[in-house]
Length: 238
Image (cartoon, rainbow, N blue to C red; front, side, top):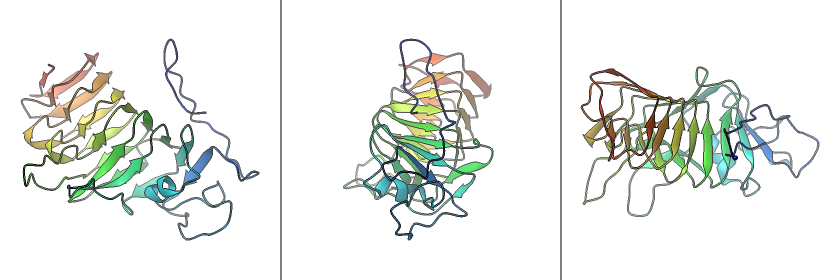
């Protein structure tokens, strides 16, 4: 079942049953080691025949709003979503609106790895990202008056839960440039050439940990609740 906010505390069910018995599924699977994006069976993306790359799952027209994509342990450093029109930075995966992308075993063993000119994640509206390490995402340089922001995550509203975002960089928001809610996330050693080395835009942060030496880890943040700042890190919420 997809995690969605209710009237009180959010409830997150990551223990979905691995289904192989129906073509009309709401649960899909990705496995960096055993998956096969070229498999052509009707059960492609099911537990027995997972996708290999994250973006292949998102490109499949059967993956729709309110569906969940379960990601098995591994390092995901292949595939990408194209850059937005007029920009140069691609994304390792662009999570569709209202879709949940969740690791099965947590951030210690599941990494989405960016590269020069490739951020880790572009987050769709009301999408959910849970249980990943995002590492090494780097946007292209600030050229032609266009800001290439969000080396770890970019996008609009959504929810990011139990993720580690580290060693990412951008013009603004090295770790993240989004209006998402971050819950129990950790930001380590991200950088920005202008400002907001951990985060930029009106994101909200709940029970998060920040470590770095920038004077402004968070620039134009929304709510910052019960968060810990280590080193010489500070935030500017405006």
